[in-house]
Structure formats: structure tokens, C-alpha cells
Amino acid sequence: MDYRALGLKTGLEIHIQLNTSRKLFCGCPPVLRDDEPHFRVSRRLYVALSELGSVDPAAVWEVRKRRVFVYEGYRDTTCLVELDEEPPHLPDEEALAAAVAVAKMFNAKLYDEIYVMRKTVVDGSNTSGFQRTMLVAHDGRTKVLGYEIAVDTIALEEDAARKMKEEGKYVYYRLDRLGIPLVEISTSPMEYEPQQIEEVAWIIGYSVKVTGRAKRGLGTVRQDVNVSIAGGAKTEIKGVPKLELIPKVVEYEVLRQLNLLRIRDELRNRGAQPPEGGHLDVTDVFRDTKSKVLRRVLDAGGVVYAVKAPGFQKLLGFEVQPGRRLGTELADYVRAWTELGGLMHSDELPGYGITSDEVRAVEQRLGTNSFILLSGLDPREVAEAVDVVAQRLRQAFEGVPEETRAANPDGTTRFMRPRPGAARMYPETDLPPVRITIEIEKKAEEIASRSLEAEIEKIASLGVNKDMALRLVKSPWLDYFDDFVHKYKRVPPTQIASLLLNTARALAREGVDVTPEKIESVLAELDRGTITKEAVEEILRSLKEGESALDAAKRLGLVKMPYEEVKRVVEGLVKEVGPDKALREAMRRYRGRIDSGDVARALKEIAGGN
Image 1 (cartoon, rainbow, N blue to C red):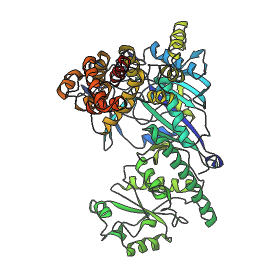
Image 2 (image 1 turned 180 degrees about the vertical axis):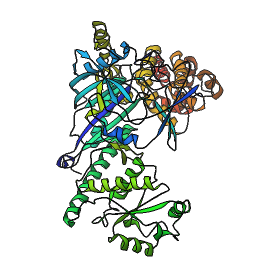
Image 3 (image 1 turned 45 degrees about the vertical axis):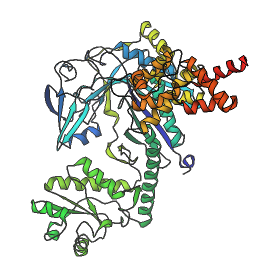
Image 4 (image 1 turned 30 degrees about the horizontal axis):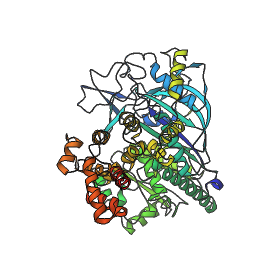
């Protein structure tokens, strides 16, 4: 696709957990726990006017789902702030310094005073119904690794509670993650290709990670992607789980918007009119149906309603993303707004056990051959789903609705909720404005001094080529590399980098568990000169839990040969195969036990002696 011609604009929101000693607004430790919670409390969400006198549409949408939120906590690591029973404490200065450092890294303009704001949260992931957030800086711009990156805002906020499971209308959250400091970096719209957007996301995330102030591990960095094309609409895609999925998410969202615009144009070409809503009860049509889907509903006393969709023939089944059709989008809306499992539409019927005669009967009742079938046990809920479907059908005449979507594992997306309105953000009344002190500025300067490009240059200065240095910075091994280079000075940095990036990766593909502890054990023996670099891979492959690299080398017969013995071996090989072939023969016969440098030294001494 020609993305520039399509007017593709993509924005990123990168959320990075900060590695601090306490949470942002309380003294609880920022650690996740897997043991059984000590207590559970339940809450429900109720809609109310914000302090600006408006109601957020996303909040209204969530309240209609009538869900119950259950919060799990621990007596020794959960406090009243997390339960929204005590006012928040002053923001953690350690987190503030890290956020100011991020602003400096992106040359953003700091605010003189930082105000804590409340941002409405509608999914129950915060006990208070809002997330506390602080706008730290704005209008940043930098160039890193050839990419111009403009940053709209940099914010410091509290992370949400951790969703554990859903059971019907009950949603279970754990409070251990709630309140962990997050820095949020929001970019300006970019016109890069989808693959380049992934690179920019990586640059932003790792610019923070190289400072050492970001948490490491699964779930510590999360990406949201905003996508729009000319004639389409800004769509926010939440929770893209992996960096490498970003290009696919962008590509599929562009495809979805293009196809929704095609559907809009076709509806207009057909002269179709937006449906007014309403439904027809067709339960009696399916009284004797063999459809298992409808049979379960009818046997339990449920109903089947039909919704007219005139002008939508062959469009309900039109594919908007791989494996997803306009009918799928309608079903997503139904699932999001109600407890119903989805819907059936005329483009896929007969099917699901529904016969041609039953389809014709519905068509005759409605006076159209394009329709939606909705079924459920509660007539009120099915009628609510009718309204949802009618609303989404009307939106099809406009093209692409503005909405928040969730990323699927394959890069496609599904409807999540409407985009929040202007009433979403309002001031926090329990905390005073925060001033950035000289002490915080000094700490921030120190943190910001470790930049991504400076880190790559530092590694390259050790003799590691720039390509490998870049791979090292991208890997989870960066901090270990720094530590190992400092501790094991007799092992060349290039050898340490190759061990971390190449050997460990190759062994991992074989299913070998290569831990930092095992690598350090091998490096310690390389540093002492008890093993050779040629033996490293086999030792790591065979290293048992709790066993040292030296013990493994002894067990495998891979202890390094002393130089005196090497020289005797080389002298014999020179006589046997000649000096030109002695090195290769020595490495072949004694691989893993003999060091190539020792062989070269012995050959030089032998030649000098002759």
C-alpha cells in the first residue's frame, strides 16, 4: 500500500513502569504477588457528572454493562490509598526525577508547576474510578538513530490494577500493580511506514530503559497506537502486546478503515437510507428450528428478534480485516454493550442450522432480504442489543466511527468502547501542585546522561561492532553485559557480546535454559583461564542446575590444556603434518580443550627456535 498517498498518520502512547522503591501515591512496595490474596472487596461503577458538569460517554457505556468489580489485596502490601479509603500521599520524588529525566532526553518543555489530575477510568481497573496523572512536559523533539521524533506530552501516572479473571458480570482485579509509577510518552502524529513505527516505539521504550530507571520484564512496557487515514477517523488501539506486532496492527487498521469507507460509498451508491431502529419478534418462525444456537435459547424460554438492514446485502459479510467482516464488527458492539454472545446476519444464512425456509419466512415478515438476528433469554437485553446494532448500522453511512479498539493476537482489532469525551480529565482535589526542585533537576540530569545513542557508542568503543552494539541494546542482556565487562576483564567484550547474543540465542532455540547465572559461571572460568572459548557452548548445553562451569568442564573432559602441554602437542603436529597445517589439526583433535592463541604462540616459539 502507498501509505503516504492514503494519508496515514500514526501516533504512539508508550507506557513504561518505573523502577522505584515505593508506589507513586503511597508507601506500598511496587511488587507483584502470586500468593493467595488476604482479602477481597467488591464495588460497582455509577455514572455521575464530572467536576466540569459533564458526563463522559465512555463511563455511560460502562455503567450500562452493570458489572461488579472485585479487588484482591494483601494486608502487608496493600494500603487504604489503594482501596480509595485514604487520600493519596505526595508523589514519589524518585518517580518525579525519572519523569523529568525523560522530558530532558526528548528536549521537552517542563511545566513550572505540575498538577495532579484525575482521568476517568471506566473499566474498573482503578478503585477510585479515575487514574491520577501529572502532565510533566510538552512539545519535545529529538533525532535518534535517524528518526525525527516529536513528543506531544510526557506524563507521570499510576498504573492500573491487574486483571486476573472474569466470571459473568464479575471482574477480578489485584491491587498489587495499582499505583506503580508509569511514565507515558505520547508522540505527535507521524507519517512513517508501519515498520518504521515499530522502530520508533522501540527507540522510545529503550531510551528510558537504558537509564536503568525502568522496570524490566513482561508487561512493564505497553504500547497504544493511534491510526487514521484521509477520510477515516482517529482510532485508538489499546494494549498492543509486542513491538513486532505494531506494523501488522497499523496495516490492518488502515485496511479496516479503507474497507469501511468502501462500504459507506457502496451504501450511498445504492441509495440506501440509515435504519431508524426497531425490531420484529420472529421467535415463532424458529419454534421448530434445528439450529443448535437458537434451540438452546428457545428451550430456555428466550426470544429471537430481527432487525432490518435494507441496502446491506453482501455488505454484512464484506471482509474488513483478515477473518473479520462488517458482521463481526456488529457482533463486537453487541458483546461490548450487552451480555449477549453475538449475532447472525442474512449474508451468512442459511447456516448455523437455520434453513432456507426459515430465512424466507423472516424476509417476508421484514419486507427485506438483508437483516440481523439477535437472540437471548432476557427480552430487555435483546432489545438493547437491537439499539446497539441500529446505531452501528447508521454509523456505516458515515464511514469510520471514532472509537477505542483492543488489539487481537494476530494484529486485527475489536471494538472496546467509545472514545472518551472532554469530561474525562479534571483536577485532583486532594493534592497540591508540585514544584520541580533543584534536587529533582540534578537527579534528572544524572539519569538523562545515559542515552540510547551514547550507550551504543560506549559499547562500540569497547571494540564491539555497531551492529552488535545495537542488537545488545535491544536485547534483555544489556545490563548484564555492562556488569560482566566490568567484572571479567580478561574476557574480550566482543566475546562476551557474542556469548550473550549468539551462543545463548542458539542454545535457547534448542530448548536449553540459559540463565544469567550459568553465563556468569562460564565467564568466571574463561576469566581464570580454566576453559577455552571453544568449550563454552558445550559446557552451557550440559550444565546442570547448581553445577559450576568448572565442574561441568571436568565432567565433560573440557578443562583447558596447560600451555606446556599445548607446546608439546604442537611440536608433535609440526613434525607430523607440517607447520602450515598444525593449527587446524590441533583445533580439530583437541577442540574445546586447546586454546587457539596458545597454539599460535607455540608455533611462533617453535619457528623462532628453528
